[in-house]
Image 1 (cartoon, helix red, strand yellow):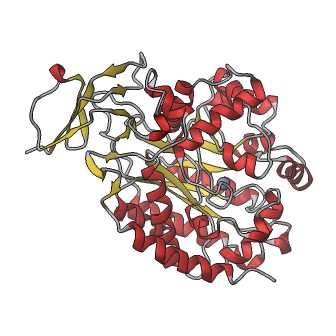
Image 2 (image 1 turned 180 degrees about the vertical axis):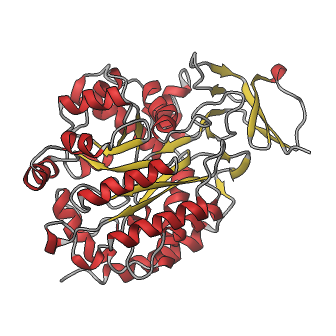
Image 3 (image 1 turned 60 degrees about the vertical axis):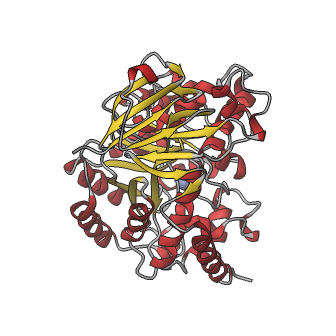
Length: 454
Ligand SMILES: [Zn+2]
């Protein structure tokens, strides 16, 4: 017998379907984690194994986070890294990250995922690119399974240390042969390409300034032989561009074109400084971009031309980026920031609240290469969240509750359903003990802080 779920009676349900319908009094009915029907009470069955009444709530598709480094939750607001640009910020943090252990990665991932889930996110990617002291990607995957989040686990890597002209210290880089072998192991052990998959493996060398040309090329070959997606950082700020010219004799656009790191199976984080040729290349090839406005502001990297990317047809999603350059993991807040920052760059009509919400749902799904999440439509995954509009923050904004989610102070969800499973009820995360996780997390963070050079 199928497990059935009925959510009904919402103040308004945002479908993100082809017509962007918003249904007053809406709800949905799901079987075994798959949406079967969406509409008003009369359009839905009256009974189910589980019934959720959503009176007074706005329901939206679960948000999709396309860029993160969850371990960085252990190193937020580190004094030496508070006021630097990207390269200085990284140099201040590498010595702390060198102390990471597998247990720390698991705890930090639980912490980051709890924060994301409570902010409305149901699917996240995580880019883990540092593997000291026996850390493995399996440590993050264990956390995702425990908390119940839909997960794209990116096997990152750094292989070019300072002695070879790279940015990271030699002691945190890996042997390239081992990186490739470990990637093959992870694909065999975990990657699930099926529709409604809860776990996909992504291959993701950290950035052009931390890996070799050969590792970029070999990684793309392995990903494509196995139907995986590819991810890295690109064109983040001026020093990133300068490094590319000095080291490779070309800018990021030429670099990724030459390596074949373009196509609908590739997405790049940031692209703040992507040039005209790059924009044309990404548009022509369907290459995706993870826009991370808070991090770009925090590190003063610049303003990515997101409205332009969208008008050229480039797939764009949102990312909170690592917790040490945000230093928050609130995806609804990130959508709000995306909306506000485009207005700073291009005027008050540069991005509407509904466009920001679209970036955070359909946009993210497309960037991750998924056709089963991002909208509340029959035959999509039952991933949805609900916000209680009686909150103080929404007082006075109920004439447009959907816009209120973006314009007013970002709140936490009262309900989150991931793959048909209720993960948050009455604002409480049901799958892990949050206070105990935070206590463990803070103890680990103190251990890492002690590694800061004095
Ligand atoms: Zn990043």
